[in-house]
Length: 329
Image 1: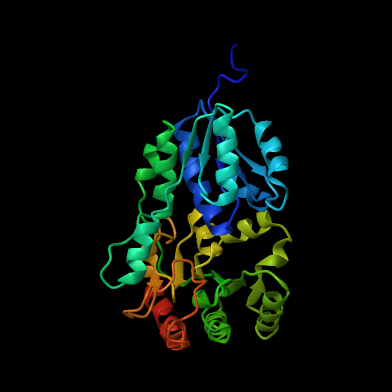
Image 2 (image 1 turned 135 degrees about the vertical axis):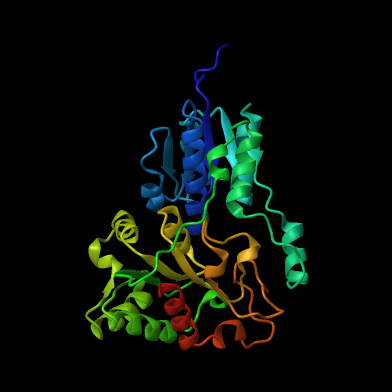
């Protein structure tokens, strides 16, 4: 009996987190363009659909990961994939990819390199850098036979000298190990805004919005990116207009990278060499204190074993502002 779908269609599974999905969008866009006769669908958070727009053979299938797996599997089957690529490698995606495998669909999965991660955390000062996440995604897709040679040409996103007219600042991160004290970022934002630069703040949630509204109330050159529109597409439209984005190790770094915007990032418990640095971002634009204990966490979720969070607490507003000025002038 002939299969209903003879056109190659790769179903990719990546349900969270937002930064990882943003990295996946970069890889899938390149792969879709390099394989125009193949369809690619990412099953993931519908919020990020605008990141997947503009390529005719690339789609995002919105998935609510809180739904029962049988419901999710039923919706995924409607895509009629010829290949399944698990870009998440968690229990949920393991069950789903196993169901496809048992139904006769070829399956490949992401190898996260957990052993290498443990080696890095055990000996952070001397362990080699991990393979970047975008490269792991690329390698996973190559196992299904779909290469993306254009992704290899990963030239650095240039950062033009100032004066900059529009700067984005994403001052928050989900994990404490990745969060620089917000008041210090406020000081940086205020000083930049007083130099006749428009500063756009990125964040979400009631607490973050309250902080950002207070900052904007004190300086007419500080604005909320959310004022441009309440949806993610409007936020991306603001990002596209920026001269530079200043962020934590957070999803906004990856959103800006996907838009080709240079990023100055601030790092604490995590580290660029753990594989989650912004795609095409200059390694020299990562602001970080030289500490032998860094990184102590891959994702920033582990409590500081010293109890001090010195990697963030010892970084002053003056240090960050001085660095920004040095690359601007």
